Length: 113
Picture 1 (cartoon, rainbow, N blue to C red):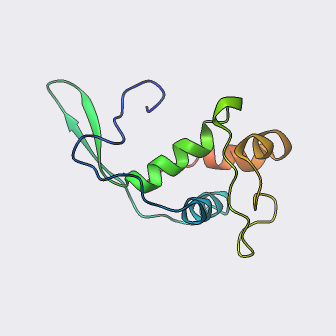
Picture 2 (cartoon, rainbow, N blue to C red):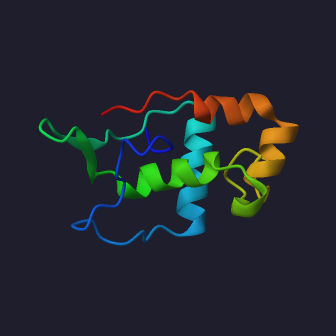
């Protein structure tokens, strides 16, 4: 939905993205491990069909950042001892090429809304 401009993840009333790289990395690690994450709250304006993230900006922004695995948007995850060694300190591009099964786990995760 984000790539198709069907979802505004940071509408005017949302705060800024404040999660550190370590926090974003830990979320990706949770998704790789298929751990449950808190749900997101999204509003739908039935007249305009616009969708806005009401709660969950930090989570959805982290997922979007990870999945945007284009050379111009390379993101290096934090190197942490308590996360999967296959993603610790690696970039989203290298994870996608070297461990496509891990990248696909994040890409195919169903987020509770």
